[in-house]
Amino acid sequence: MIISIQNVFNSEQVKKIRSYLDSADWIDGAESAGAQANSVKNNQQLSVDSELSRQLSDTVLDGLARHATFVSAALPQKIYPPMFNRYGVGETYGLHVDNAVRIVPGTATRVRTDLSATLFFSDPEEYEGGELRIEDKFGAHHVKLKAGDMILYPSTSLHMVEPVTKGCRISSFFWLQSMVRSHESRDVLHDLDQSIQSLTALHGHQHQDVMRLTGIYQNLIQQWVDT
Image (tube, rainbow, N blue to C red; front, side):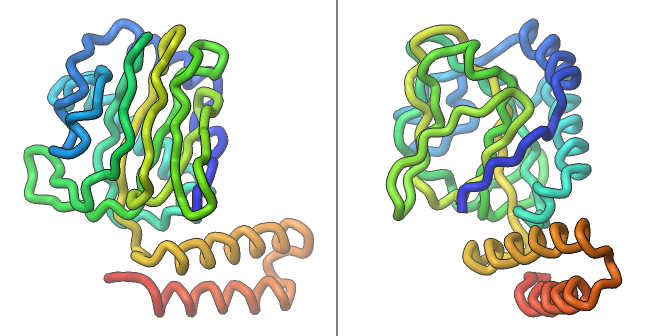
């Protein structure tokens, strides 16, 4: 499932983060590409060794931890430290699949890349082109969200960033290992959780249907979670 997650950051938070990104020093984006992806990658990114990158990465992680929809959709176990990229005119990232496992720089921690994420820090009107194209069994999906919103999709998907033809596209990108390995099981849990939240808003936590569905949700979590 491809899930759009709104308002990871509000407009004021985006403005503050952009003030740092707009004045940052950018390097060749090949630093984070795997062997297959490197041949089709043409963009810029913040060095993962820079203090700014580490600070902004922590800011993104804090925002994600507070976002209930993200937690419900991803059920994160490990999150690769978020990175930041920029696409100017003519820059693109051709069709590729993300590496199945990522090693966190400077550590022995391995992250199985169940899900990939792009968190936008440029509004759609700031640039032309630059859509994130994700291919699945239903065809190609073209994604261009407002600043502060994020797209979450299976890392096994073929995807690319279309060439930017005007302006500049800035975003954060990262991968995560979910507590639930199966995409299908994770989708079921997310749909069930959203239904529970909707029913709770209407009837309260003590309603018999809310309590019954919550029990089913917890039982499925117990069966499907990797420990």
